[in-house]
Amino acid sequence: MTLCFKKRTYQFGCLVIAGIALLLIVDKFLIQPLKIKLLKKKQIQESGFNKKKIAFGTTYFGDSTWFDYGSSGFDKCEFSNCTYFKNIQLADAVLFHGFDIHSRNQIQGISRPNDQIWIYYSIESPYSDPIDQSALNGIFNWTCTYRSTSDIHMPYGYVTKKSIPLSNPSEIFLSKKTKLAVIASSHCGTIPSGRWEYIAELQKYMSIDVFGKCGKTPTCGRFDCVQQFAKEYKFYLSFENAKCKEYITEKLFLNAYLSNMVPIVLGGYTRQDYERIAPPDSFIYSGDYKNASILAAYIQSLDKDDSKYLDYFKWRQYYDVTSASDNPACLLCKALHNKKLVAQKRIVNNLHNLRNKTAECLSSNSNSLMTGLNSYLYSIVTMIFFAMGICSYIITDRWN
Image (cartoon, rainbow, N blue to C red; front, top):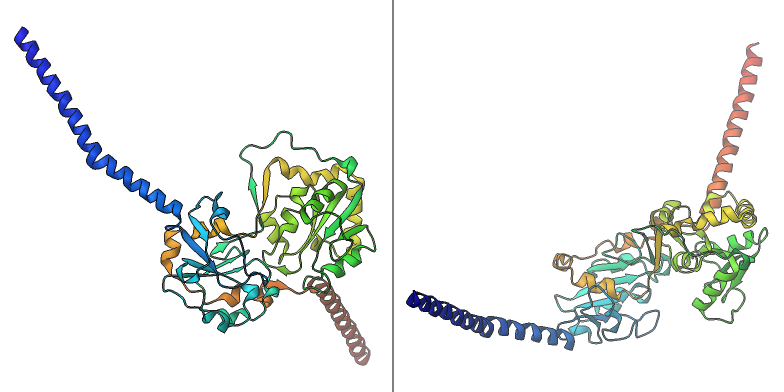
């Protein structure tokens, strides 16, 4: 009995020793090398050698530096292993700003490694393009614009549905909103959307304060002014400088929604452009009204009816609005880590379709043109019936 116990104890001890020895072997030859490998990988990433490098192939509205060089702009991104880089030859991707491309030769002269991705970038409307974009077909690999058909879709803002509706959204303080409507803009004169002509017509029937280079000079900065407007004004004129497909800018997201003003909108290609991205029943579409006087009358009726005015804020209970930056850092880094997109090695041969003013945009007089066309057609139809009546009278009289 004693010998048996001693034998089992000896066997157990041997198993323990063997187990410990096995653990030491695994640690030495598997775990430690793996730890060292992971540590080296982390050090390489942190040192920047393995980061996706993005360079700039043009200026940005004439400025030689688009965004700050380095990786700080990517810190809060889902994919943060990227950096803005100076050396084009060593970059993984190169950004080209459409507004600053004045000829095909301007960028064809840039030496280009075979695996480098060239990206066409523009968040302005096609009216800002200095040349016909068909001249740039066959050069770029990706497009990054506000259009949802782009390789990298970069809208001016986002609307997302809340997972849990708010029971008590923050209050809109109507007592302080003593002024009617406001717009701030630095893009003056005749522009494709006919913005200022329509505002001039509206001002015949309602009060609109204009700030910026196109009106009164404010004493505050751009975004501070918008916050100040939010306290005093009920409506913001989110009037775009062009009426193009999906071209809806910060004038809606930041200046109106995030500033607690009801947006009166002019832009996009149709009303559906707004309906696709905006919370329901949250905006007033200028194109719904036959003329400026009818729109102004509706605005003034809302000004006198607090309940109906506040209906335009019910969306805040169910939706969140985010205004996007013009820095595409997060979207670019995510795309550069998309193995499927990178592997496609595609060439953009139809840039002219994406940036076609005729197909993508409406002229400034499109609404008035339709009104005129309807009147013209009515006149023709009237004349036809009148002529038919005369002919009928003549024929009848002759036969009698």
